[in-house]
Length: 275
Image 1: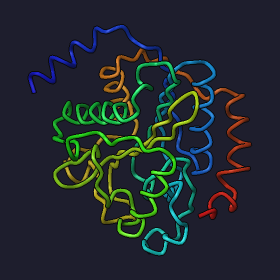
Image 2: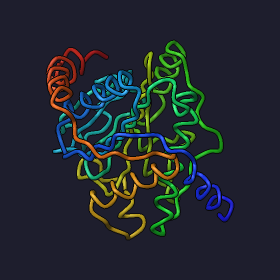
Image 3: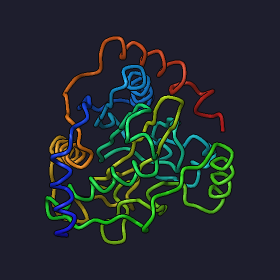
Image 4: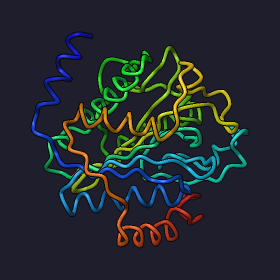
C-alpha cells in the first residue's frame, strides 16, 4: 500500500493532460449512448480528452453490441425495462442505481496507445477512490485483457453468449472491480480510427430490476449521493491519469448531433433488434 501511495503521489506531479469534464444529468438510454458517441467524435476532432459522468432517467437495459436481443428472456426481472444497444461489447447491464462514466481518448495521446492498459488504469483509479473512503476493492485477475480484433471479438462473443450469464455483472472478466466476491464495476471499449471510447458502470445499490446485484452501498454500508460519488471518481481519475479537468457542458452542436443519432440509431428498432 505504501508503494502504491508513493506511486500515486509521484503521478500527481507529472505534466497534466487537459480533459473536458462533463457532469451530466440522468437521461434516457438512446440519449446517453448517442452523447457518448458524439463526444468521441469531438475528442478525435479536437484531439482532447473528454470525461463524462452521468446517470439514467429510468431503469434501462443496455445490450452489448453482439448480444442477441432474444437473450433478454434469460432475465425476467428486467423485461419491463426499456432497452438500448451499446456500440461496445460485453453483457447486458441494468442501468439504474449506479454511476456511469465515459472516457473519450483521441489517438496520439499516451492513454490511447494501449487500450488494455487504459482499462486497467481507469479501474485502478476507481479502486483507489474506494480505498480513500475506506472501502476495500480489488481487480479480478492479474493481467489486463488483450484487445481483440473484430473477427476474434465476434467469435469469442458468440462462444461466450452460449455459456455466460446474460448480465455483465453476473460475469467475471480480468480487470473487473470486486468488493469481496461481488462485482461492483466493469467497462467496455469501442475503438475507431482516431480514438478510443471506454465507458462503464459503478454499481451503487441493487435495482428492483436486478435485485440480486448488490452495489457499493449494500456491500460497504457507506452511502453517498450519486453527485458525491461522481466527484470522488472524477478526482481519482484526474490524479491517477494526470488529467487537468476542465468542467464544461455538452455543447449545442453536440446536442443537436446526439439528438439525430439517438433518433436514427439508438432509439431505432432496426439497431436494437439487429442481433
